[in-house]
Image (cartoon, rainbow, N blue to C red; front, side, top):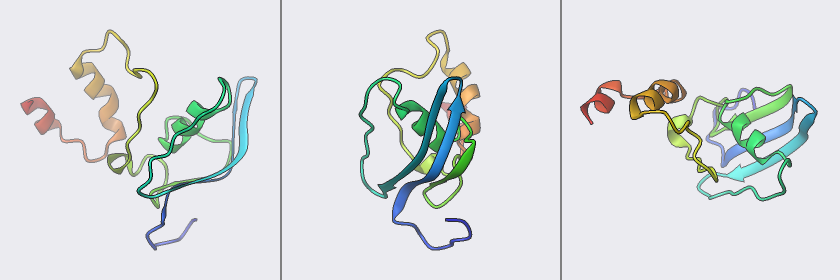
Length: 118
């Protein structure tokens, strides 16, 4: 995965990913999701679905392994990746301004002037 400049046919590539979180351990996990495909995670509570999604979004780190998202490191391609969770992921008391302040860091191409114009 590292050092490759070719466009990858994979949207997400996890290789031997391990994350320890309290008494829960994710992995080692190997996973591939092709570019241009809708991919869903289905499984019982506690299986690691949300943790896996958070690793691809760079919301949590990993203890070992490699994560590649759209040919780059997690978090570098947020503007090209869509995620839909089963529940609202924002705090209920957040205003649009508060949500923007907390989320803009995840989107390198965030246009603050466009946001303010809306």
